Image: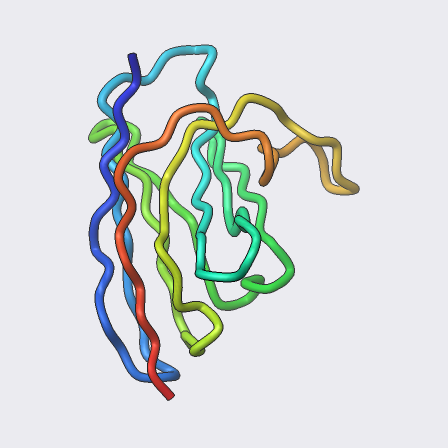
Length: 128
């Protein structure tokens, strides 16, 4: 079974940056995609970014231009660099495998909705 461990959260002021890490214990051909999603009290779960094995990245409109997803396949680690953080980015962030891909104008990308397995999240708090 795949295990995903997210880390790197913390508390920052608006405009600040954080970099989250996700170590995936096992990476099989059927788990090509890893995504980041967040959950905040009173809000729906939101997929924010996803990346496949070859580095094709998909972003939610709410984070485009501010968040960057990357990976180190040799370390089975995915990263989420978050810049220009705003109070509305406050949430528990999780990394998860993704079970489907979607066709976008630029090609085939990991879905931001169909999550498979995920582990413990990491809290991000942004103060104004």
